[in-house]
Length: 297
Image 1 (tube, one colour):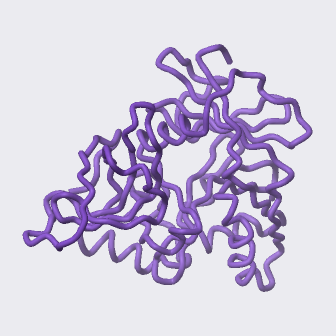
Image 2: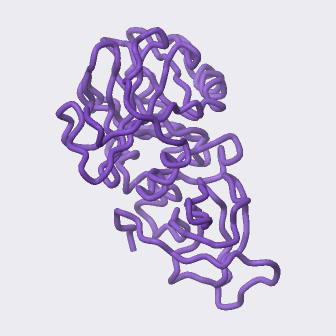
């Protein structure tokens, strides 16, 4: 790692430990990703949903060892995840524990000259560096998450602000679910199908019927999209409003840029489906920004 990388402590993320002979089998029946694809060298993005297909929490799964998994999620949702998943354990040989205090989660943000960290060429790749598990979660811009026990040495890289990390995540079109937005969005509204967070060829899991129906029977009309606005500094996850063209929106994540403008991801109707008769009331004049991936038409 070189000076092309900066680090930020991600206090907003927590960690849930899932251990036991049935850990993979158990999560396979609860999450939207295919757990058979999880390896020590490959992390997985997955959603945990309610029966209506709405996302309770997003998880980044890392295999620490045989029958030993770590799920990174919003720290405020870690105890919720343990409680909600725990209801399905029944006779499965698996234990769930919120281990957020035991892990230091660090974001590594690369500039334009940043090379592949630790030889990880693609998003989702995992490498080991001492006691740390290094997961590349994005390529445009380059973003890496380092997860290590709290007593292990830090990376020693120059630090940057949490706001810089958040802006990079927004530029990457990366969703997150917080307490304010838990169970607000069906999986495809957060573009999980585009980002590889849904396996449509695996068996059943909670919410699978609704998610599969949206995939096979019709176009999803509301999707997470990226915007910027000059007068939206108060936007935060869960904030609702109306765009200038009449589309209602709900914020997924938002951050204030150094130039004073706010950049945000929000779930709203696709531009082609903007209402002909816009509702009255205050509006947020926002300009659409591109995502680094294409949305299904």
